[in-house]
Length: 161
Image (cartoon, rainbow, N blue to C red):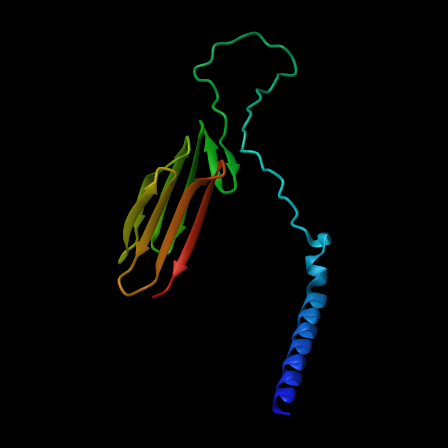
């Protein structure tokens, strides 16, 4: 009698487990269908800047010029692009910094800490630069700049102790 009761408990447990698995599958079925397949992200091209000289409306006689006009830098996601390099300035709680990316290599142009802050610079790879604006016992700011997937990228984080 006792073995018969254990058998029924085991069969009941197995049936409930199968029903629970079916219920989970039924609930997740819309998410598992192909209609929710990952949509591929379009490949975003690297920024290309083309300078087109303006053509005059009427021809004028050639006159000597003391200096050729310089094209204005273009902007790309907060970065100024000029002469084949990207430049961006950061004004954060702990101070200011200007970063330059040329040929995929990230470099610090200038930095200045505010009163009570210090700046540490880390460059784990040529294409990445991490600046930390630290205040002893206070909050600190991290500016992480890198050349990623063919374009400049920066992330600013504010952390409290």
